Image (tube, rainbow over all chains, first blue to last red; front, side):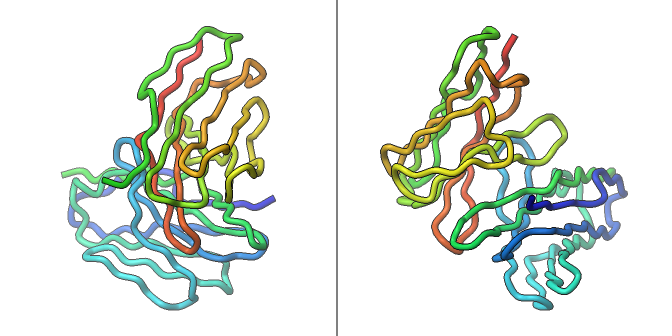
Length: 112
Length: 111
């Protein structure tokens, strides 16, 4: 069974701190890994990673994939209260199939 | 504007009744998905469809059914066989090798 595990499940930090969120996976025929931010209802897309070792960056957020370790990290520097959300990791797997499996999510709370 | 529309936003049903959640997209995407989210948790895949008239079970398909008669529509029926149907249901779509686009979800409460 395909599995995606995120850690930690919950994290509380102060504004200005740097955080690292983890995502590990065990899937058949890995195709890509995606990160989403969910604040209220619909998750919004952050990054899509397919190649190992290449960092993707958007402002204070960055992410990298390690196919050897079957994992990815999402870094957020100089955190702000607006970064408070659930961060979701999803993996696309399967031969010819577009099955996307999500992890449990990390609930990040940024205190002022 | 292109997007995914889920309706209704909130749905209340009595135990033992079947209920159908609507999902429509005008993005011309081939693949569509249904996920369930319980409080404080991630998304669990119920069903997905890559093309019209074809769909596959996800990890928690028991007690649910779907149809894909049109490219733009992928309704989900929550049957009375689903033991814990109260949850937040998210519909999504995508084109190959691109990110998922999500609807705003339907919150189903069964009492």
